[in-house]
Length: 151
Image 1 (cartoon, one colour):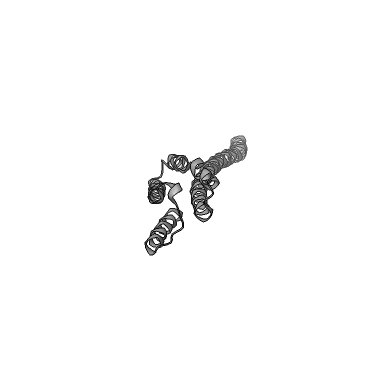
Image 2 (cartoon, helix red, strand yellow):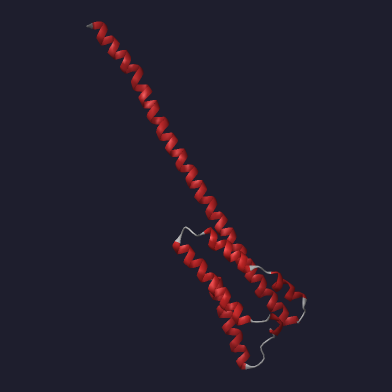
């Protein structure tokens, strides 16, 4: 009977730490898996932000170039407008957020605001500094459209 008690104590003394070690390993494995998932989400967020910044850069380059052309009438400014690819950047952004309905809505609002501004702009060669009151109001309308693009 004494031998049985000693054997049971020895088995418990060996099995208990092994069970605790196994449980600790399982918890650690779940934590590592969760950290990898969080890292993946953070990387995706950075890619989305980079894509949004690329789209904003393309659009602001266009706006800046049009303003430069308005001030100087130098055709070199219009090269930047012709080279800009905001639609590609916006499509990339929308593709990146395809799994998040609220982000899709925001990206599509961004695209709509840009297209409204681009439609208002028309042919950049026709962009001139506003002189009449009506032209100044039209210019203010365009600025308000760009504010919507930026927001």
